[in-house]
Length: 544
Image 1 (cartoon, one colour):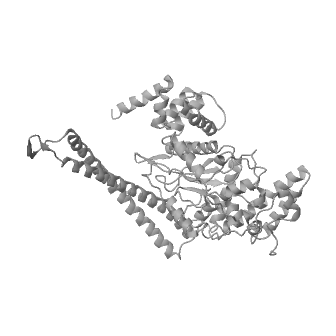
Image 2 (cartoon, one colour):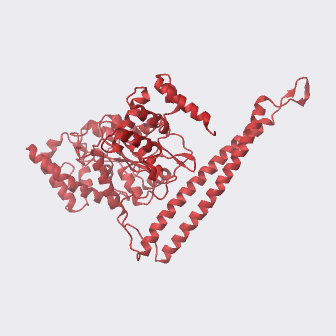
Image 3 (cartoon, one colour):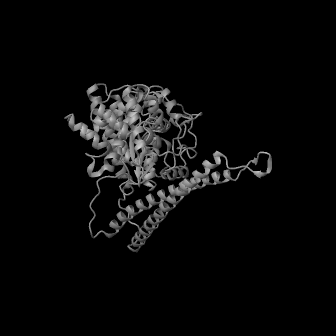
């Protein structure tokens, strides 16, 4: 491809269509912003599930104080399209026709023709995402910014101040970060329909067995770490209580004699007895976790040895990024829906989001925290009678969609402690509602998988299904559930009664509000007061 094939200004005629030209100042060295080692460290940290984490970090900084100058680079567009083969030339050609078309019908045709080649071109860019690629390609994947002048100066200034690195250590990924993590095996590729493996294909079968064994090992390791932290906390409290009973004041009028135990110390003695019982229970649980861990570790080592004996590790899918990218393309369509705007490039024509409705990492984390402040157990799963808080992976896709959704409720090889996966469009009309649809989908799928064959009879899905059948409703039951969940979170949490009585009762029981919300609601209406009293009665009857 010719060196001057793609210039910063597409051509003089198009420059007028695109508006004011961008600055000629040189961009800074992007190694400081897109540092491979930093990204690798972040991937490793965010992939580790901390079962003792009880909240999200408080967002104190949403934007950089000093904006970067990448969108002022006159060669941004040229760099974005360069070295991507003939498909880049095709994208360039169709784009020019689209921008210069006068007839609305012709413009609509070129717009439609542009979409498929652009995704094919973007796949070429995605294949390089594991390396140190140019900022224009990074921002193309991350924000769908193909040419800076497709967006106005105010929007360019907004995007140039977005924080680039994941300093919050949360599993929220932009598309370029996600593809990099998948390509470097920091994150397992998304689940798709598995291809049946021939019985003669021993290396591939061994790799699949190794993947399952590794999932079990990860789960065992996470549970073991959780029990270890739990023991450390019990021992800390126990040490404090023991120290407290050794502190004695002198007996009144007899300084050489210590006084009796105080009421606080007597209470500490009773608490010590309970703590010792907890310590024994924890130790028994740790013994089981250690056995599981040793067994899983031995299985992984055995399979690794067999693979090496077969001639080394064999990749199950040599085109892992290609497969993941095709999955992402499906996700992008789903966020928009059939009637949505599927145009894959960010332009001022279609971008109408306010600062708080753009799916930035910081905005998304704030909303995740807001949802959890209402729905107490939204990110929790029960395993071995223990409620574990596990934040799902959140993939941010630069689309104009309005629907978030759950792609996977958890890893099929590690149902205990693996993260689920939700997808969020970055440019929706209302980011909070888009995220609520995703979280509702996650809620439904986790509950359904937990109930397994009895999902129409037990738990959240069972009670909702029975109500759904009693009402003789038609259509997709999950869509009804998602709509009701949004009402639950936006109306019922404020004391505005919009749901059917049976649905409200089911949600109150199986998707409880936080204590603060419940305390507020019980004073608003007899309806909520009655539900609150049921909670009290259940608590009193526990163990009987």
